[in-house]
Image (tube, rainbow, N blue to C red; front, side):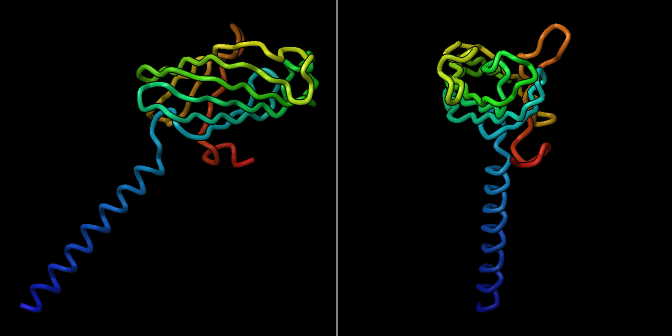
Length: 154
């Protein structure tokens, strides 16, 4: 009887360990839009960080930080002013449509300060990346990677 109880205890511990490990792995992957992302701005080469939260009902909170926002300075080569864009987004399938207000940091009268933008992000579950539509006819949008997985942390 003792041996049976020991074997049963070991089997239960193994099952619990597998369950806990699968929960940790699932939580770490964060499939879909939710999470922290990073990219290089395809227009001016600055570093960008994107944070997407929420999402239970398809509604998300979205915040983008651009370390050198040429739209604020008005000069593609002047990356001295950073900016944020905050707002909401709605996801349907692998498409996230956003409505964000841009704020130029420390320069309320600069360039695109206060402008509302509507970037769309497309999630690719095969590569776990996002693609935005902020480029132009000649420049494709940026590819966003989960923070620390491709560009490195900053």
